[in-house]
Amino acid sequence: MNIRKYNKAFQIGLQESMAYRWNVWLEVIALLVISFFAILVWRYISDGTGVEGFSEQELLSYLLLSGFLFTSIHIAGSGDAVNELIKDGGLTFDLIKPWRMPIVFFLWAMAQRVFMSIAAVIGYGLMALGFGIRFWELVTIRGVLLVLPLVIIAILLEHVLFHLLSSLAFWLDQTWGPRLLLRVAMEIGAGTLIPLSLMHPSVRGLFEWLPFRFFGDVPVRTLLGQTTLEQYLPLMAIGIIWLTGVTLLYWIVWSRGIRVYGAVGN
Amino acid sequence: MPGMRHHGRILVQLVSASFKQQLSYRTSFLIVVIAKYLRVAIYFILFESILVTTDVLGGFSRDYVLIHFFTDFVLFLFVSTTFERNLVFGLSKLVQRGDLDGLLTKPLNPLFHIAFYKGDFYDFITLGPLFVALAYLVFRVEPTLEQGLLFLGGVMVALLFILGVSTIFSSFTFRTIENRGAGRVLHAIFRSAQFPSTAFGPWWGTLFLFVIPTGFVATLPTGLLSGLFHIGHLAYGVIFTISLCVIGIWRWNRSLRRYSSASS
Image 1 (cartoon, each protein chain N blue to C red):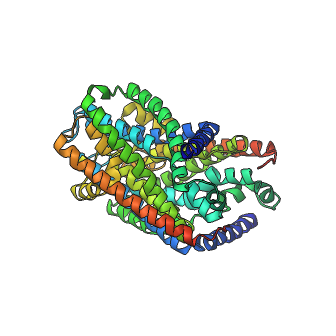
Image 2 (cartoon, rainbow over the protein chains, first blue to last red):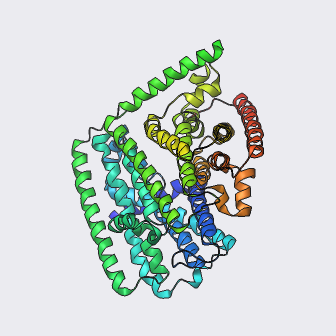
Image 3 (spheres, rainbow over the protein chains, first blue to last red):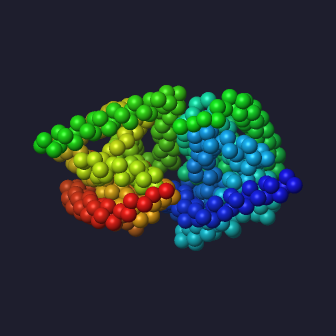
């Protein structure tokens, strides 16, 4: 019974994404454009010879794949709707329905991700062909198998992080600022503009402690066979710890927020 | 001149109203401003990291890459404080809600009113220190008077370019109504300006400097300052951007005449 309910929620999400399919395409194109310029600059810098231990193919494959993963995992404007629902009081109507809203939010986001991923495959595929990036020559079967759990962790982590910040709207009304910061940190920390290993050591050290590398750098290095099993297991453990921590925090914030929610808005 | 003064007074009133409105969420205001500074810091680190791998980026030495970086941020914060966000994203909301009709009844030029009806004070607050940093960096390279004037000319071209593109973009809003996705694409294209266009390689560099000239935003002024470009490049920029603005205003007026006033 419960599954049917949530299945319906997912279908509603799919239909909404279909209704705004042009918008979904354009959101993907926007992220593609950012990756495109990053690849142009790094191609110019590497000048056919590579940069700091990366061959040109490795460097461009890294940027392309991290851009693709980021586009597939991250939803532009993630958390906007939740913030608006809380601020405007619209959440009231959803709360009286017989389902758990955090799960519904996740299913709606997953429906959007389905469309984003399809669009990203096409867009980044074309870009790989255009730039002659033969990333498939570097991808290993072991890498493909190992990357799947990491991608699941990344999707859940992205969702929970943004919705955690959006839920602060129960107290702050407007949470656009923290989400903007999170998005920028994610974009850089994921390695869409620069591989993490090429960053300034002090900054690299900071980003290695933060969860953003799970949105690009960690899965991409695994996919390209640059992560040994000895490195992989601790990385998985770190990802799970981050996910558990932020989910717990989200649960606390959401349940406390619901108690202070005034069901009115502007 | 009285017309200019009238519009100037109205601009101050619009900006002041926006400021009060944005300050009503004080905590959020503070967080957004901190977030904006941190965004600049994160991108600064990105460029520092790029400069570790290469001494010269697109023909610019380290000092000029930093000038390029700050020129790009200062210009985008300035246009975002004033007209860019209103034209690219704001007009769409006005049309959807039907609020545009109210605006059109007022005795003001509609394009002026829509472009400046809301000021972004988050960006305004962030702008100040970055402007000081840019001025410091420019004076540090000890430009000649001619180079300084060329740099200012390049900045004016950059502003006109963003105004022209934003006006043309907004004119399509009357037809498309929802343009959030397209607006994000435009922003992403504008963001290419944060890298020197000359660092895109010869073919793409020429394309983004002269044909789809996002390079006008920071690469042209910095190139004029460093001597990489000369007055001929500036002249091309002036002609291009003035043409763009003329087309933008013509298209905007044409679209406005066809505005159906239907809203949801």
